[in-house]
Length: 365
Image (cartoon, rainbow, N blue to C red):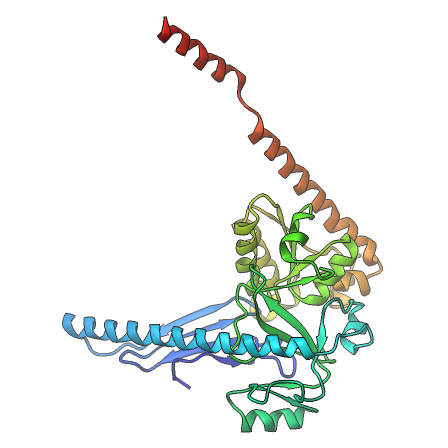
């Protein structure tokens, strides 16, 4: 559909119900489009090639395209605010999650401040754009009947998606099967969830940390939080790692950053690349940080198909102690280096200062 709007689509490795890719295509004057796979970070841009235009025609098309692009951005932002308002209303009435949710039990993850999609919308305003179905058949029907609404499945986990200022823009839902989705029409890029935060604000949490640790999914971030005993950031996917890392680095420039990446070795044979590693390394390089990846016992990685720190804690013979050891040692090293760098900056050079005083005395004489 080439209507200038964002459309989510399934990509390779998506589970049932997941849509980790999106595209935008335009037919205004000069057909063009953009596609991104949030799992791999791969981006594709294209534009149609046609007949030659005069400079006047080109200028007119560029002006028209700029106006339409600005209008689309304005409409998109207005929609994102509308969705954010509805999400915040939902989170105020959604019951707290508990450790018995199938996904949390399988991943040995804590419920933290997660919520559960309620059974109905009775406690939401009558004009709410949120609809709730009891099963996938009902959800599919509701989506067909209400294409402009947010349709959720009762009982799914709800993860609040916030920005650097604490503003909630979306939710990620997680089904018992592990399938993950974001609220339709919401803003996800640059946003994140804080695992193990114990209800404190972002500033309060970050200021106590020896280093900011960022992972991809919630279960991995919570595993790291359990092992390190402090909050860890979940950026949701590898494509979002660089954006989240840069935002956090900009707000907390004196805090070192560790990217606890996924090792997507299983995708190398099909995609010819390892998006988890590549994006983690990219994120680390952008913020002068360090990337660390799980190291499993010999032959475990391939035989058991393990790739992240949650796997290391729960499916490897090495267990949670390996998480503490592998990531904790990196955090210790980078935080000590940051302290040393900070002390060096505070030291005042003695000799240049004395030389300046002597010069001033000479001038007075």
